[in-house]
Length: 386
Image 1: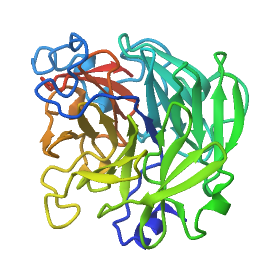
Image 2: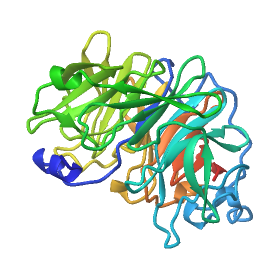
Image 3: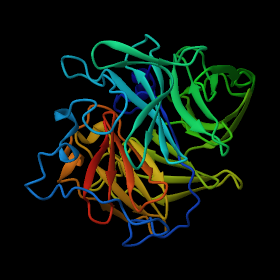
Image 4: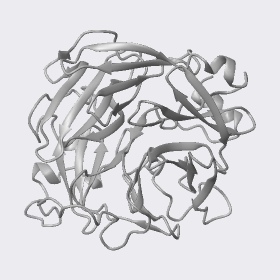
């Protein structure tokens, strides 16, 4: 079923995002305050003051559409845009491990071009971990051998540092593949989800606009749907488990796993839900503040989620501009974070993601291929790598 058809089947407005995944390994407690929900971290990095007019035109402060790939940070310069300015490559998931942000990158067409890139969270240096991707100058960069990245839908890293990529090709139902990536970039393929056809009701299909939530053990959660409702499904290797219906008023748009809970936000940013994977119970963390989905005064960004002492929701094309919202885990109250200076002023053309910086009181944003460091206390932000 196509995304538009599936949306219409649920009575929702058609709205496109490629399926992708986020792995966030965070066990911080609920609450949060003036520290931006990152109290147990080192101070934010020293950033160029993008609010100072004398710095506003420097590369770290520019909007992403005005930057040339390779301008900030060292390493390969991916051809993120076509000659007409349209997105050529897209980030469809990420995971933070060992001082690097691993990004699942694929081309926006059925060619199967894709790979895993790692960005150093301090220096912004980039390296291709595995795969083949277009770089500036019309050439391809390649690392490793093995099956390609057709249907790339996410990346994860085990606690021991082993990298794996999730592939969910079109028209294969809930079955797919996991690529285990060696230190040399070579890829070994294993099948996943093969038991789903026998385990799940025959009328369920993957809700292919939401972000699967990957765990460090390479199991993952995704959203399934039929014409009546949406369901949470867990896939671990070939095994498949139907968990529960998802009690949101609109379709799930983004998911993240953190400390035994799967966090979900709907396409309109109206609600934030947490599902406890041990008890099997859901709790509504942030309820809709208006009578109808889509009419929120302060919608939670539905592009990506990062869960710390507070929850951060990043953007979504539905808002036609970058947006970052902080949600208090205890009260559900929302706060829109500043985006008036620096690269946060960008009007993105692809899904935006957000991650907790692994050591500092800062966030890592992904906006149209660029990695941006954001200080949630001051609102200042810089391009770290592009």
